[in-house]
Amino acid sequence: MENTKTSKKALQSLINDSMREAIGHLELPEASKKVKKLLNRNSKKIASVYADILKREEKKRKKAEKFVESALKGKSKKSKKAKSGKAEVTA
Image 1 (cartoon, rainbow, N blue to C red):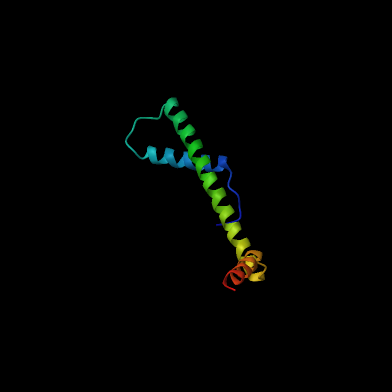
Image 2: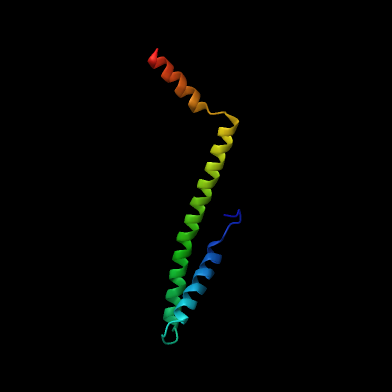
C-alpha cells in the first residue's frame, strides 16, 4: 500500500459511483429519490467500515516496521530479561 491516506468522503463517492453503475447495468426502472437516498446512506456506512479497516492495516504495518527496525538494532530489552530469568531457574 502507498503512504497516502484515503478520506471517508473519497471512499464514499467511489463506492456510491460503483453501486450506481452496477445498478444502472441492470434492467430496472429509473432510480427514485428514495433509492438514491438509500444508496448514499449505505455507501456512507460501507466507506466508514473500509476506512477503519485501512486504518488498522496501516497501524499493523507501522508496528511491524518498528519491530523489524528494533530487531535489526538488537535493542530488545524483553529478550535480555527472559534469558536472565531462564538462567536463574535452571541454575
